[in-house]
Image (cartoon, rainbow, N blue to C red; front, side, top):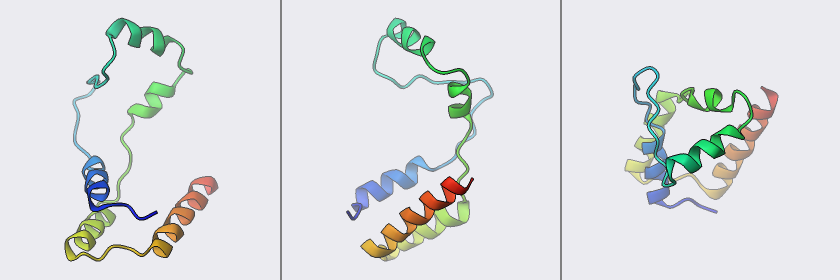
Amino acid sequence: MQPTNVQVERTLAALEVDTVEAGARPLRVGIPRDTLEILLQDLPAGLLAALEKPTEVRQDRLREARDRMVLGDAPSSDELANRIVGRMVCDRLR
């Protein structure tokens, strides 16, 4: 399945790494706080701490993806599939 330009743009925007104040945890969920607190009690230990760590984004790869998008040089479905499989293999090797 080939991603749309809108999906690519949203993905690239989501990968932008912003500096967040230490200890700041904005809640962006649409459920009441008391319900959220009940749900948070059942989470495995250390899960939230692991999720709060910023995801490492290679800025050179982000720039490359943006440049390709501007030029209209979208990867073929085979290239995209190879990248996905390559990423899965790398993640399993970690």
